[in-house]
Image (cartoon, rainbow, N blue to C red; front, side, top):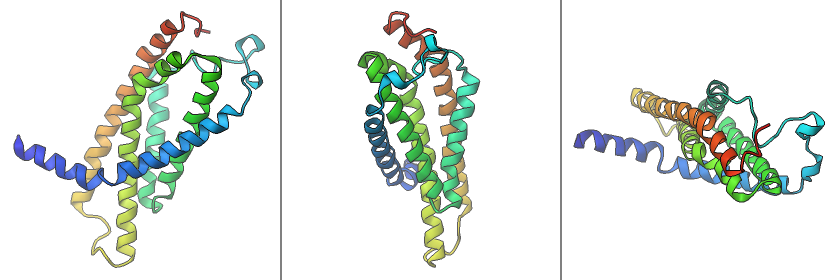
Length: 201
């Protein structure tokens, strides 16, 4: 057991210690930028259920499968950094951060902060770390590619790299599925209860 824990700690140091903070910084800065951008958008300009639109803060057609497919797609985009010297991974972090920031900024114009937190926290505490782990994998592979091109590494990737990355991606995928289930079955119901049933459309 001790050997397994030590091995897991080594993998985390190798793949996550540097790259997760970098990914979190990019994601956090993008989220803040999205929030500032979304704050400038008048809530009155958005479509409403009364006008034939849908409620942008409490969609009623989300299922575990649809959420999981969407988030697994985002996970795959993060992984593409491995073959794009990190460019696609950074793009994915920025795009997701901007989107979340804009949605939160719009939501707080219409909903109470408590309701917004209820819409984000239950699944977000699982989903966001999973995406950051996958982004870290993409960024580390990007760095290995750069080092190989500069002649600092004898091999582009090793079997150990592939094995460890595979495990991390597999764990992240499981977390994405769990987060999708929580979002579809817990988050939406909890937020609607916190809002007193006013979110259901």
